[in-house]
Image 1 (cartoon, rainbow, N blue to C red):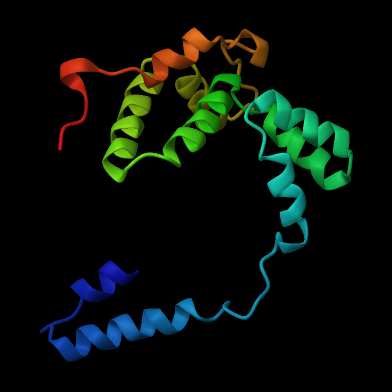
Image 2 (cartoon, rainbow, N blue to C red; image 1 turned 90 degrees about the vertical axis):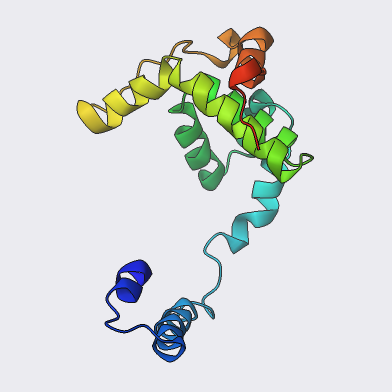
Length: 163
């Protein structure tokens, strides 16, 4: 690991630090000529996921009906409905925010998610019990209200992230 290799230098100098960095830079080019694994699907991915709602994304995948689209739908259907809606809104809103505004939004979301049910349920299902069967609350996209979603994005007042 880069950090370990740098820390292992007995007497760091510009030259041997540069040598370590150059070695990692060379490693980063190994796969440079390989094609992007999803390249053949990018037009479809951009089309399906350009929707403004999770429900529309799901409808786009269902309407396509290809094996690749249905595979993505299967993955999405396992996810927390609340987290799906949070993530889409986060991406949409974040695209027009400054970096500081994004950090503030991310901090608010992290605090709200830690106060909710689904984060802990996901950890339980995947890491603790390993049953891969989370019980999301709410369990259906239709049950995630705008009010619920707004609560994840609302100001934390005096507890908001400060720069």
